[in-house]
Structure formats: structure tokens, C-alpha cells
Image 1: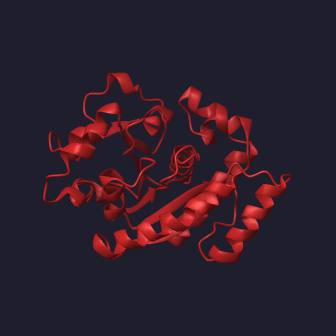
Image 2: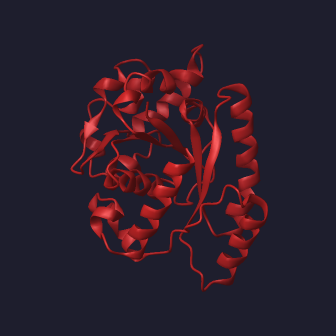
Length: 253
């Protein structure tokens, strides 16, 4: 049975989707069969794997509201070992439509059970909020990866996110655990980066992944070409860092 990882952070603009895409791709490069599930109405994970958001038929929205089965939403990508359940802006409506359903917190979990055995890893990209879509992702997952930049406000929001994860674990998923905190856009020449990393090591040493993802122009360019970094530039420092981070996550979950 495949392991399910949710990439979550309620703070927008911290580069949450890029790590989700690139960790999923690095797992695929390592020979694992991976399903990427886009649960963010912005649909950036979808386009990040080269899928046109404007020409979708079945999406994660259709799956969550019960129009189609998860089996009918999976799309192949141009990359070996990676499939995607795509999303677009229609998913924003699910926040309202799911509220009145009794099983609203478990819609995603129940759907992923139908195809979990077909994959080694399922990677979920959560929206940058703590609404019903994120709760669905956390209720369905074995572990949470928290991507965060080396910035003061990102550090400040981490405590709140930890509290939310603990509450979700208590109410919806007793098996949920924090698999790792992944530092992104790290620049060791900046005092702020080194200070934030020092604070994280002080308070979250057991959760912090050992390989920070460096700030890289190549990583920033890759999504505009619809490609994860490990396919866009196989030899750049960002690719090597994501490959190391993916291997570490696979040993932790």
C-alpha cells in the first residue's frame, strides 16, 4: 500500500507547491511510482507537470463532490512514473459544497483508497489555508511535509501550523505525523537564512530535513516550462538537493 504525504503550510507565498512537485518527481526518478494530487484551486501542481488547466475534463473537484471516481481523474504526464489528479479554479467551490456532507473530512481519503495500492507514494499539494480541503488532505495522509522559507514570518506561522496538525490528528487521523520540515530558497550567505535555520534546529531538530533547498534561478524557471527541476536541469544544485530530500523522506515515512 502506497504512502501518502501532504505538503501543507497555511501561509501563502512560501513556495509550497514547488517542493511538492519536485519531491514527487525526485521519487519518480528514484524508480518509485508516484501519484501527485492537486488539492489547490490555483492548479499550479497541475501546470507544473505540463498539464493544461484550461482543458481538463475530470478534476479533483469532480472527485471530491462525487461526480466521478478517483480512478477516472488520473492523468498521465510526459514523465516516467508520475501521474496526476489535476485541479483548476473549480475546486474553490468544494469548500462550500462539502460543508454540509457528513463525511466531508474523509472524501479524499475514501477516494484515494481506491487506487492507493497502485502507487508507491501519493503526494498531495494542499491549498494555502486551513479549510476543508486541507483537512481532507491531512485526514488522508500518513505524514505531513512542511515547506518553509528562511524568513521570520514563516517561522512565526510554524507554531500555528503545528497546532492545527495536532488538532487534525486528534479529530480526524490518529496516525498522522509530521514527516519533515523542508527548508526552501535557502541562501547561506544571508544572516537571516542562517538565523532562521539555527532556530529551527533548536526547536525542531528531530523534524528538520538535513538538506535545505538552495535558492536557484533554475528551480524558479522550471514551472514555466511545465517541468520539475530534475527533468529541466538534471545537474543543477537544486536537483541534487531535492533528490537527497526525497530519499530522506522515503526513509522517514
